[in-house]
Picture (spheres, rainbow, N blue to C red):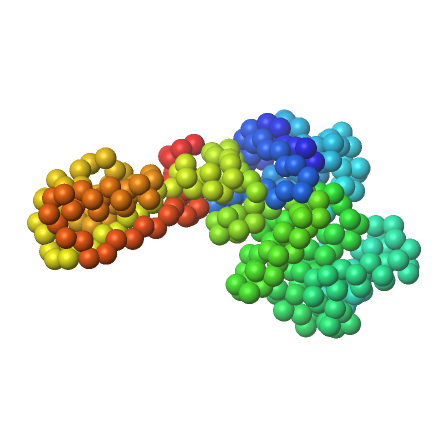
Length: 309
Ligand SMILES: Nc1ncnc2c1ncn2[C@@H]1O[C@H](COP(=O)(O)OP(=O)(O)OP(=O)(O)O)[C@@H](O)[C@H]1O
């Protein structure tokens, strides 16, 4: 595993911010650490980045223990997100070249590395402008580029797209996917379910410092989300008759006017069963549709207070 977190606990005084979190991220994959505000995402990231000392547990970055060898571990990690190291008064190129110099590149090599990354993130045109004049999306890209200057095997992104508009998010997502495709290990924190769904190979859901679920986005949706079957009847039918026809083998069945809404674990199976049960009862259906669970549904069911934790 390129990034390993084993039973990590972090406390601030009496407050336990991270409570026994474990996760493993293999090379070339993206792990999303998903959780609501205050779940412990940033604290986990700061511990991985050697900025916070854990109370217990082990974190290894590319095999290096962050507590035993923080300096070495830090050198194997690119950190980006809420730590904007970008200097507004410098140009984009100057920013990256400076990071390269600090990472041990020579003067010329630093310039080359900066140009390479500016090109890669599609901001080469603005390279010579002070970052002060750059848009939010461009700055995020620069921040991400900064984390990649030294070519670290592990990249940690703390809420990489917070505050970005949808097109900027899309292009940043593309960059993150490319990064993983090239073999980097990526851990990102997010409150955006869509982000986890679109980017991550695996998702670790945390709530109040503890892991409440883990798995691939699809797997989590299947396990925790319910599908919604919506059937519109050809005419208003007595609700009781509809309930009797549909039966009670579902999460919920609701009848309002000529619309029947069924929450079910398996949407495809439920839509077929509901439509045929109505037909058997002589109730004509005008249309039927099924909406598969979103990661939102899964996330909500896991992080409601007093929920699955
Ligand atoms: N330096 C600190 N001192 C005391 N408590 C802290 C400190 N940093 C974080 N906490 C607490 O630890 C808990 C987890 O916070 P953390 O910032 O890790 O959550 P988060 O999941 O990143 O939330 P957000 O999405 O809001 O950034 C919170 O209750 C927070 O108040």
